[in-house]
Image (tube, rainbow, N blue to C red; front, side):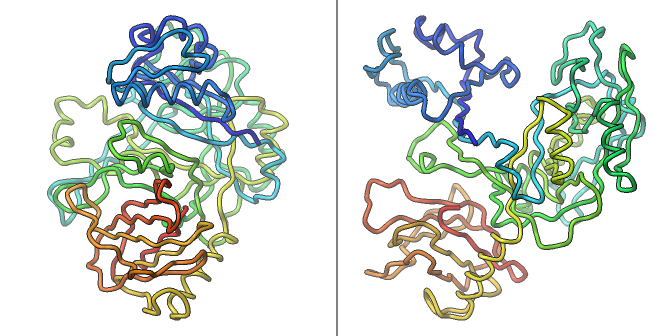
Length: 458
């Protein structure tokens, strides 16, 4: 396993000379990932132990404070001291080798290749809007595929805005609308491997008809536990409060520093429920990330500007079996990667902790249940400060929920009861380390049928 950090600049690489000292361009160009960069933001990929990564982050923070900074290898080329934001996001993640994933019965499939669909998309899909029954302010967009996919081939002269043309050496890729497309060779090997558990394969058209391609559909749906899966709600319907945009996101400790203009995130993993897996090798989760709901005022613009509604606003999480993982490892070089998912073992640990809190033998002794929020200390250090507030940028943290002198040791739980149904933000701070930025979790659901819970450090 290798650890990396992706740094998304607040500008494209073509514009880098306007924001970075000239000498930096040559050095940092070696880190640019063209496949994941766009006209709005360049993405740079660094090994976590690369000294240039820390220098770039230090430079970005200095610019945000309006200071020029100095020192380091990159500093020899000079620095500009204006206070415009330099970075959009900094995300730390792991690149797992095949051997790293052997102990996981199910892993998440990620694609590094996006294939463009041949327009017009209205020939492939039918759009359906579903109004929220008890809210006039929002609804959902459903995209129904009614014809075979048609992807861009090498002979397609039009450059793709959201995806590339299919290349002859590609075995598996995802379309701009998040469908999985595979080569004829991979389809044949998959069918031979799975025998009677083969997934549905549908032919895919290509603009230059150079080779047969196939769309593969999931063989069932797997439930995700949230929490502990860190699905963060980025915005809500102002009328009913339902989530509009959701992201699988784990804020890093840096994200809790005040006045940050950059997103700092750690790797976030899915946690699956304990239901038996459906038969087969490819599944999709019941929860998605992205724009899961839309405002009614936006939906009303369909007649005037229908094209955007033929692009899916949310993305599924794909899961695959060990059997399919091995097939891809042996016969589909490049273009995809996998990461582990948390399954029964981790979920069982959380259940034990939640049960301990409910029985009153740790923490406050208040039984958890309806309209309660259980906070479990999952870090190696006691907690002395705990705040809980309504999930909103317009609310304030208020008093410390722990009594003066109370220390929440590792593994202990604290239960906040008597809360109104809704979503809550929680933060926690160590007892003996004033320099640590603390821990936080946003949008924890609490209600009559939802036992809210957060493990500090997750």
